[in-house]
Image (tube, rainbow, N blue to C red; front, side, top):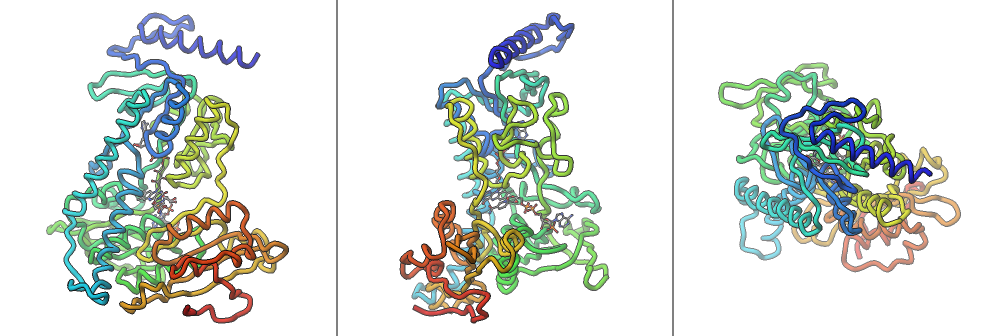
Length: 525
Ligand code: FAD
Ligand code: NDP
């Protein structure tokens, strides 16, 4: 009965669309008078947003032989920066970020190289233009690759900004200004987010930039003030410092909120001791442009209760992101948003308040803002919709890494979360400082290389969280994440034979508990 009703309703909206497109009077009395209307077609699935989640979902649905369309449109940043198909990660996120992080690490490697016998100067000037040209070429090749992948799978691509007309119809305007209507049985929203600008700071949008602009700047940003203290801020400040730029982070509260705070402070300590400046407990007041085009910045220092001022070439806002829900006309179809975050409310199956409309990735409420979760959620959704699968996305124990100069990778609970969930007496924290072998010859400082494993104290001592600061933290933590996902315990970790000589083996060697009070200092092999 339900299936018959759904089929009947699909038939009626398709009929309504045909009437609308033909400009004649629909039976409900709706008169469709739009001129230059273009019929984008009717699809089994329409995905709005061609980023990490949307493309994965569309490609997977096409594998089931379904008729699929993707709408993707990049609204230029207030500075006018724009890019191609692929979404945040590819164009203004993970990919250019990781490549710039690598470029900065290479600068550090130069400093080490002469200790290892290379006849190179311990430092060399960095060429921003050369780096960005190479990175942008790579990004453009990825944009092209996505278009080819869609074509190969017969997925129709519309370079238009979608907005709902009714709950099965999305409209947009082509570059030529023609209105296009696309209808679908199922609609997946995957429109991600964009950087936030503060509303209470004079000159913020006029003179500041965001991560949407940074990766596409033609010239080096020069002396930079990065506002915010989370992933985007610390990663960008880290690589800018690595290029030899005078870089300052302005923090209003704690670094990396939500992460284990002991680890977060080690990350910022390392950055501070390697050249990044920090303005702590400070909030921005205004930005003014000087005659020489530099920016005069005024802020309040809440520790000293004073107003302070300095001049920078660039101010980078890294104060969080705004979900791209505003242009979708969601009110029209009854898709409900979280009142605070303005993200789309979804259930465990990514279903919104409208049964055939789904939301995945950054746009969905209470989901991690990470590319691999958006991709996996998109693929699983397509399999449930068209492949008779039932598997839901499991958002627990998702590993992540902050690509700061000394990387921080983690999976599972922070010490604080474990304490509040299980009680301080019921958890055991194993920890150790360690010295990566590669740091020894050039005598690099390893004071912040630290590992922490949070376990249940009783019975099987299940591992609740693993935190690693050191080189290649992302590579280290990924494999352990599998173990933790499978319910690994401390005794199993103890039985795991390490790979020598690596930093990852230090995880298998952890034996000092915080409770014991023994010093967690470096032990040699
Ligand atoms: P997006 O990738 O943002 O894609 C949404 C797409 O929809 C965009 O192309 C957008 O233009 C388009 N769109 C919006 N509205 C409409 C509309 N109305 N009609 C048509 N199209 C529309 N994650 C990691 O896992 N690792 C990292 O190292 C990492 N680094 C990051 C670094 C930075 C600087 C940033 C900002 C993010 C980073 N992330 C990282 C997060 C990651 O980029 C996002 O979680 C991921 O891109 C979200 O994917 P999505 O599919 O939800 O949305
Ligand atoms: P977040 O929302 O994580 O952090 C925002 C930061 O800005 C916080 O430090 C916050 O401080 C601060 N802030 C907010 N408003 C103001 C203000 N008005 N003035 C001063 N500071 C302010 O945003 P991000 O943009 O850093 O990251 C967004 C998401 O992107 C992350 O959650 C992550 O999932 C993803 N990402 C992932 C990466 C990776 O995987 N390596 C890299 C980059 C991004 P406070 O704590 O006081 O609120």
